Image (cartoon, rainbow, N blue to C red):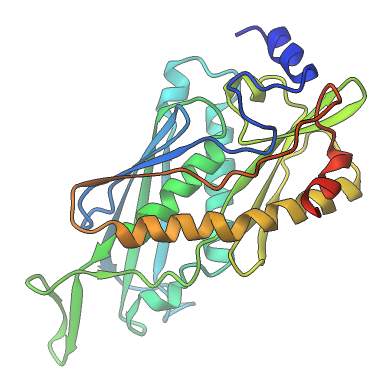
Amino acid sequence: MNSEFVLEQLALGKRIDGRDPLQQRMIQCHFGPQSTGAVELSLGETRVFATTSASITTPNPIRPSEGFLKFHLDLQVLRDTGYMHNPIKLGMEIEKYIEKVIKGSKALDTESLCILSGKNVWSIDVNVALINNDGNLLDAMYLCCIFSLQHFRRPQVSVSLQGVKVEIEKRLVPLSIHHIPLSLTYAILELNEQTILLQDPCLEEEAIQNGRITYSVNIYNDICHVHKPGGSPFNISILQQLTTVTLMKSKPYTEEIRNLLINNKGFPTEKTITLFKFELPKQTSDAIQVEQLEQLYNQ
């Protein structure tokens, strides 16, 4: 799609897919066996698939009471389709972001993966593969990771003088997830001397963005991480207002995700959720300006 057309629509206060500027696309999730943590997630037309596995290994001598949590990303689709940016660099950025959010916020504490201090720990591996790219890979791959970790069930183990034994016949148990950090990305565009913010940009919007910023927040209004990989700078007041908006989204967003995971029983199953949407009042200006955010959300 022509970039000029996307800009023309934004100048009229419209997005090419009909969404409001601060509206996320629908998320659909298809769950597979819990023993593999299989989840296929669609964020609009962006599709990602993730699985989780667990194995018993020896811990790092420096951290004898901590297990391992590793993420592996497959972005081969980008190479095959001639993606305009460097897929390797993007993959490293996304992997680093996922690790910072999940490990840094202790959403999954690696100490909970210890079986026998200094001898045996769990090593959890999450493999995420891109199926189709329609923008905002960071949010899509992150959400698929956290969904897979929540959905995954590992074997039970018993510890005796003979060592650690995997109890194959006993029911599988979930990982210890303490909270669910969310990931919300906004594209930053400069249009007619105005700063425009678009949540969950599609591929065509990413092609014309001047920068982007991603928030990771949870239901307790904790800001777990803020990620802005270069790009256009913007005023600190805009950042403060956008932070307020993002925190307002965190509670309903998290509740939708929790309900989805609680209601997902048995496998394979299929569930669909629509994320909470803020209905913005109609604007008389050509485009929604960032300066109006505070007024809109404090009504």
